[in-house]
Length: 549
Image 1 (tube, rainbow, N blue to C red):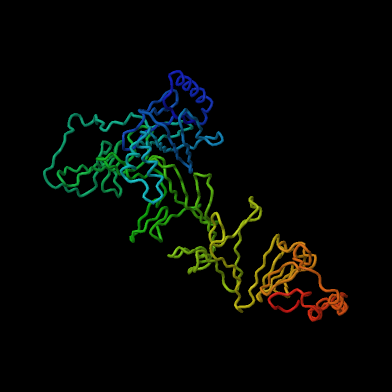
Image 2: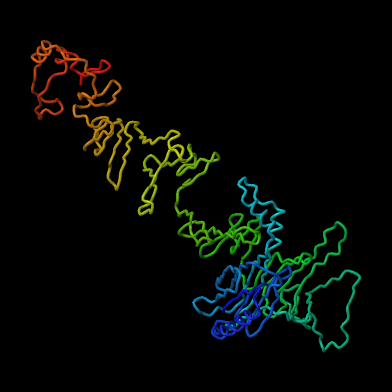
C-alpha cells in the first residue's frame, strides 16, 4: 500500500500523478489500495477534502501548506512515520512487500502553513534567547495558528483499504409494523421503571436483558448531555459516543466536548484489559490492575514513555524515549537515529551518579565534596578512565583549573591517599607499562618503581638549558645548574700571573688516583678541590660559600 501527499501542482503534473497512482495500484494490489493522505480531523474542521477514485483515497488541502508529518498506527504494533517537504513524495505502508494485517488503522497529519515573515522573525528571535525566558505564550499561540492537526481512521479488509466515508447510517429507521402509531411522549412527572430499560430502534418485545439495567440498541449510539444554563453558569455540552457512524469508521468509545468540537478521550475497540486502571488510592495503572506507585506501566517487553515535540508550534521536531528492560534503563534520542546517550544497567549500586543540591556530582557517593567526586569503598579500587580503547582522536586528557585559551590559571591536585598515610603511590603509564613512579616517600622514579633518591632514572638525562658544558656542570646554593666555564669567551683577562707564583702553584699541585664512593670499581685520577683551594682559591670554582662538590 502506498501513501501520497498531494500539494499545489499543475494540472498536467496532477494528471501524470493520477496515471502513476493507477499503475501502482495494479502493481501493489495484493497489499491494498493507494492512500494519498492529506487530513481528516477529529473535532476541528479538517484542512482537507476527501475523495476516492479507482481504489485511491485522496485528501486535498483546502489551503497552502509547506510541510506535513504523517504517522500511521495499526494492529500488531504497526507504526509508520514520515515527514513530507514540498513536492509529491511516495512511500509504502507495507514492510518488505508483505500484506498489512487486517484491522483498523489510525492516522495523524500535522500540517504547517506558510508563516508571515514578521511572525517567523519574532519567533526565531525569542527562540534564540539564552536567559531561559523562551517564547511567551502569546507568540506561541500565533505560531500554533499556522499549524493544523488532522486525524482519522481507515480499515484494511482482505488486503484492501477502506477509509471512513461520508455516508452515514440513518439516525432513525421507521418500523413498518408500527404503522402510524409512533408518537412522542411527554411525562410531566417522575418516571420510575422497576425493571430494565431498552432504548433504541432495535429494541424488541421480550428483550432478554440479562444483567443489563439500561440498554441502548441501534446503529447510532449516543448519550448527549445538553446543558441549557445561561449567564455565568457552566454550559458546556458533552456526549458519550459509541463507534463512528460512517462506514469504515473507528470502533471506539469517546467522550466528546460538543461545545468546543473536541474529543479529549477515546478508547478503541479491542483495547486490552486494564489499559487504564485507577485504584482506590488514586494510583494509575497502564495495562495493570495492581498499580504500586502513582503511575505504573506494565508490559511484557520494554515499558516506555515517549516525549515528542512536534513542529506544530514552530519549534524543531524532537522525540525522546524513556524506557527500561532487563538489559538497561535508557534514554533514546529517536530523532537522531535512535541513539542511547544515557544508560543504567541493572544492579548498579546506590548513588552510582548523585547530584547534590550544591551541583556537586558524586560517582559512588551520596555526599560529594567537589564538583566531581569519585568514590569507592576502602577495599575496592577506584578508577577514572578517559578515552576508550580505539578512540579516534588518539589523545585523552585531564585538565585542572581554567581550560580556556591559556591553561594553568588555578591550582590542580592529583592525590593518592592510603589509610596508612604514607603508602600512596602514583603510576604514570603508557601502553600498560609504568614510565614514571611517585612513591609515598616522595622519591620519583623514571623507568623504575623503586627510586632510591628524590629523582632516580635508569636511562640517560638531557638538560637542554645547560648545553655544551665540556668543562662540567656546577650548581649554586639554590640548586641551579650551570656550566663550569673555562673558555676565554666567558672571561675578562687583565694580565698574567707572575711566573714565580705560577710555577710555585703548579709544583704544589698533588695529582691523585682513586674512585668515587658510589662507583668504587671505576678508577679515576684528579686534583682535590680543597687542596687546590689552599694553593690558590682562585683556581677553584665556588659560589655563595657553598661546600665543594
